Length: 347
Picture 1 (tube, rainbow, N blue to C red):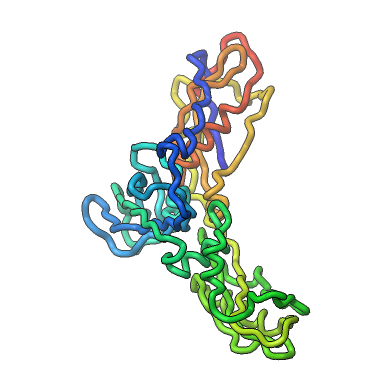
Picture 2: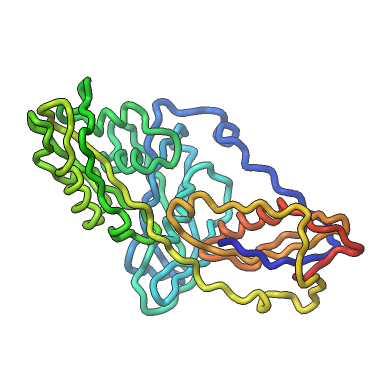
């Protein structure tokens, strides 16, 4: 959950920054055609200039309509605790990019060999563009199951279902559908698992040659998905090359321990014990982190003017990523407090 420690004073009130410019204005209003699949490949991790073992999770792919020459690598700096978990994640300063929104969450879900705390770590994610005709099939399937943007175009679906006659019309319809008991299956913290089951059907509509065509590697989900298809029945008679997807939501990744507010409160603070809101802040969660079930927090300070407007918003700390701090600032700026004679500061 996002959390805010409140600082009040009569200081110049800051306004909410304007939203990022639209994609077309950033990239000159030009769209590449046809759409491409954009993948982000994690590079080597170096802490204090020394390469360490392990690798970061690969972020989700994207459908992109951009000129590849205009998309650059995206770099982050962060730290690693003794258990190998990443924290203090922040994107390096640079131009706004409309792509790569899953990079920060993927890094937050990554794990590295534990034993000692590491600081001053850096990593870059390199963009790789592929046409839908040449993109890795596993990436197309993963995107179709967990899209990060527009729906997968028909060209991508045609590649996924290129083998067999199961897509011929009239397409088989389920007469009896098996379903895994998802709650009993292990979930990967911060990562959404999936399994694409391949199978054929005999003349009676019974699945045969049931197997995992592609998947994220969750063995429990794979086994449950295969069993679910085996007990299912379909119309359409004998078919080949049938496919059916199953997925497991990400397991919750708890937020790092949060420091006490009192440890961060300024010594010269002048604020009421309880903040009275006339317009309560509109809470919202960073969408990309919600998809991966990654929890986080932010401690935010702010001041108020006598007329109740909020300003001078600052992030004192945010974990596991600076993205939670940015979201918290927008949340606090959406509120308004009860007017007072002098305003307040230092909460």
